[in-house]
Length: 391
View (tube, rainbow, N blue to C red):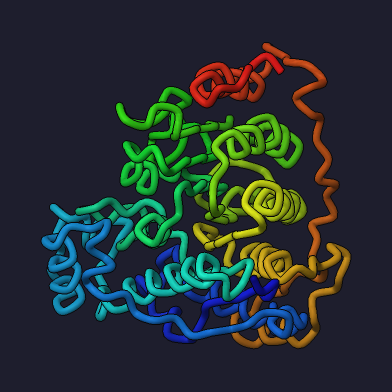
């Protein structure tokens, strides 16, 4: 198997565009690629164009009726289809919506294919991670569910078990729903509490369907959780459950809307804490599934100050050459931001935060919402996976 790493990207992926003023701007993808190029990260990746998924591939997760509805919406964007979640206040219709959305799916499936067939060890699609889409419903800026389709492709091509870890600030509800009753897939989501944030799901008690009990693990976090608390929760649960599941491949979703500057949520992580999470997932892939790792993007709405730096760190880790957080942001990229957006861009690839945390083994503090949440997930999910929650 090659150790080479891949980014699936072409400019056409930025056509996934809900229009001016929508939070999910393709500018964040464009700026990430430009920053990664300026820092030499793309020189360390095999960059390949993304195919467009056909209806048969989309149909492994989505209904034929829904795919037809998305096509109609792209032809007549001014006519909403609320039954299918198209043209709502969050998921606008736009021209060529079907083609742009199928392109994103094609990119994630190509990343999965390349890893599964041994072309590369790691592969990424930063335009992907559209984890809220349901089989017959658009939701939360997501039209087609590219992570779920990529996972289904892996299963259909011989993967015995797939682990999916979602670090977006919003619960990975669509991926969980699609695969909830499939014992071959472990879905793990760390997200802001459903009591304070969309989509209102992802409690610790959501543990998998009747034929897959224990294969959904949810870690709802209190608003205000920062690097130390987030990493404490991650390390108290994620490595143990993924190791117990023994996946053939790891698929991850890297929404960076957990950042303190993100306008749509209430966690307080830094780029440094996000980078630490990406490193941990990389190491977990090598520990449990011989390095087979498929990484996608996701949410993230601080589109200049946060997303490009966070995802450039992700791509550098995928490439096997992590960037020192103290690295200066290239002046050429900062000047591009100044000219195009009349904004002052960050100076360095760090927020100047120390991504340290206190390990769960240090003891449980019942007086904190965070520790109560961690303990609830461990108490509910660990026994279902044959783990002892007291250790």
